[in-house]
Image 1: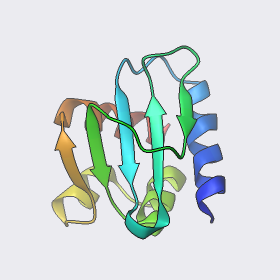
Image 2: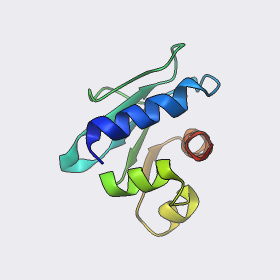
Image 3: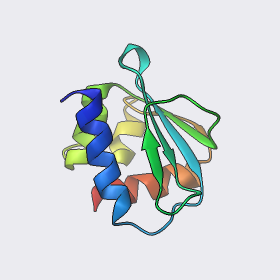
Length: 100
C-alpha cells in the first residue's frame, strides 16, 4: 500500500469517528508522514509534517497492519514496532479508532 492509500484509509476511519480533539502525526521515516488534525470537524488528514500533540513512529508496513486490524497497537508498542512521543492517552484513542 502506498502513502496515499494509507492516508485515505485513515481519512475514511477518522470520518466515521467522534472528534479526536488532538493533533497526531504518524512518522513513517523515509516513507513520509500522515498528519491527523483531530481538533477540526471533520478532521484534516494529509501528508504535511506539522507540530503534533502526539507523534507515533512506525514503518509504513506496520501502519498498514494497524489500519487493517492485523497488528494490535499495544503489542506493536510493547515489541518496539511503534514508538510514541507525547500523550500515551491520545495514542490509545488513536489505536481504538483504527481498530474500529
